[in-house]
Image (cartoon, rainbow, N blue to C red; front, side, top):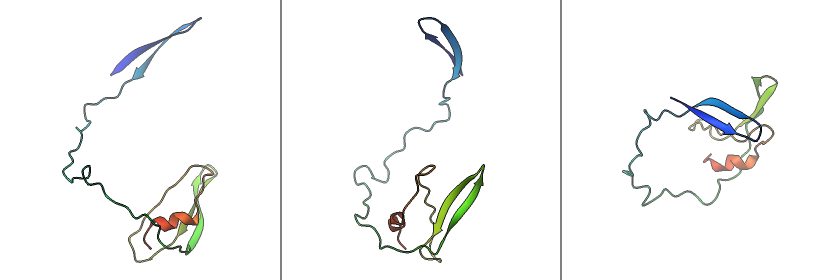
Length: 101
């Protein structure tokens, strides 16, 4: 499905086609069968204890870019991958405290 959009300016008239979203396959809103609207989930108000990383490094992802990573917590526990920020945003050891070691 395409629509024609006309932009008027003081000196020119430009016309171009822009695709519009096809909503044919979008699901209807989900029900609240789990009752989470009436009784939302609660989360801990304190962070878990501080822990040290057991491994740290950089992963080369191409085009001169690298992702910093660290490994911490129970080596026999359920793995969690925490992606955060953009170029230069970084993370701190505080983020390790969001997860139950």
